[in-house]
Length: 240
Image (tube, rainbow, N blue to C red; front, side, top):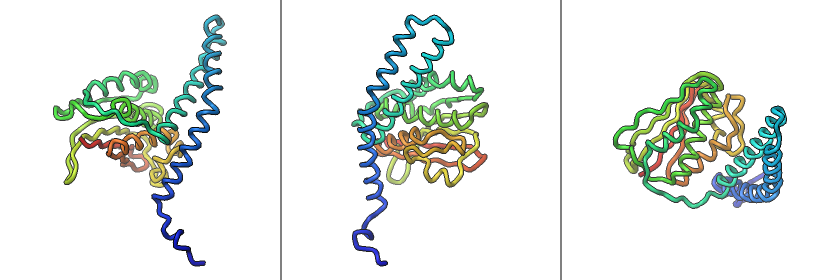
């Protein structure tokens, strides 16, 4: 059967726009329905913790509270991807931001015996212009993804360098690990929301989708270079 003109004109970009519109509607509905119950769960768990002295019960209540906040974070990630806030770009110290990320992730890396290293910055990339909060969220997602891939042991290296192409210059931030790598099939869907790459040792796709979205919001790009058993290299480029 011959395709109609409207079908022929329906592009992948149209499909992407429809998917994003549906995701926005889903995100708003989910946030409205789930935020209040989550708030009640977290609040009651915190209240019970105040007067609870039994170690086993305290541990259970702390777990309930932590999981409620984890759900909050997932909702926030979904809202960010579906309806990102306007960027608030400032010029700030990249060294200080990376130091902050190191402080946040060091305990997790140490607990799983992963060597997390932040390379010394070249002098020409000490400062960067971007939305600091959003850039921190993107890099944190990339580091967490690498930690999940490694599970135990291994190495993660975070680097930064300037780049220049024929029509653009900026700063490239790289998070590389020597983990199990990513198959071509998983790589094709890696930045799709909710795609699970756990079969390749990777976590839920929402964190990577968030990082990809933040790169796009800045006029930049996030790419991945990886082969099975040869680690993964995520490169976040931001024009300056």
